[in-house]
Length: 397
Picture 1 (spheres, rainbow, N blue to C red):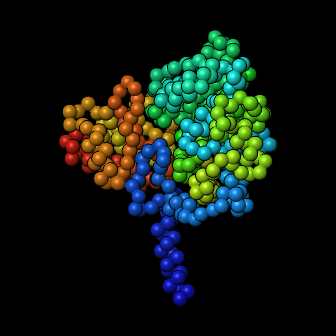
Picture 2: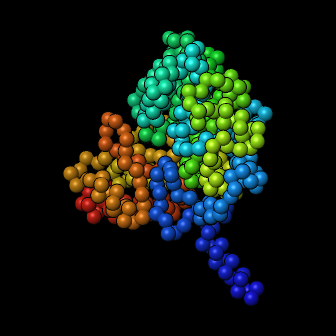
Picture 3: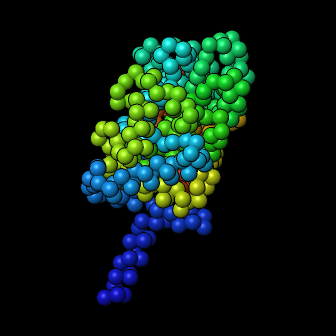
């Protein structure tokens, strides 16, 4: 009996774990398609299994889950709970961004500078317009990153700016803005710095020293499921934001006050998503932390970019601005090319990619995040070559 159970346990371990380098990591389900997307993304079997129970949202055991997740997200960020707090906000990543913009910027004396070089920068500007938040937008092309001098010039031209917001990893293109340099320029001007790190937090190392508010989501580089966003907020800045909120449910200081006071959400919490996140944080630690995950994502990107460029595709973002989260490729100029057929051909092989959203040229996107490993990247390249051959698209040998 013992021997039979041992064999079953070993078989289960082989099905749910895989080796990455010298590390044994939880694997995704073989029944699910591989999501080469920027999120929601492929998750491990064990993250899914963590959700397979019901919990009382006010029960002490679940309050411990909330506290653990908040504490460990701060640890991932490398900040002290005395200086920063983690505010979990129900809903998508945009809910988190909206909660920060509508809570941090004062109604009368505040002015927001938005640095926009993609869809998500433009979305912040849309939020500001909807709520009547005083703001200015500085735009750059979608393949050009912001640096410190851009911020310095904009703030010198408008000394009334009190807050600056930028997207770290612009999922529109895969471009990384230099938030370290930008943050230094913001602080030199004594403004507060808001970073949308939706698709970079836990996948790209981030230095928080100049950041007042960092927003991210459960279903990106932390490799968990959708259900909530979270804000890593400097406590001093959050205290100054009390009374600024334009909404009830997205009032960031009030949300934090409730979590700090009794460990509970003001409104219905995302119970199952939080159970999944606790497991996902365990798996980040098993992998070796942010730097190890960053290296895995970079390895996946190298394989995919090299493979696609060999087939004749061109990466759209210059290498010096390209992050490891997602890569944008321009459509090939061949009459046989058809993105819908390419997408469907990969989907039939249980591999899903993303259409492009670049405003000036037709593109598609391939994500490198989630529970994916080097064999998955090679398999995508091989499958893409097969689909192109079936379409009659000429590729380089």
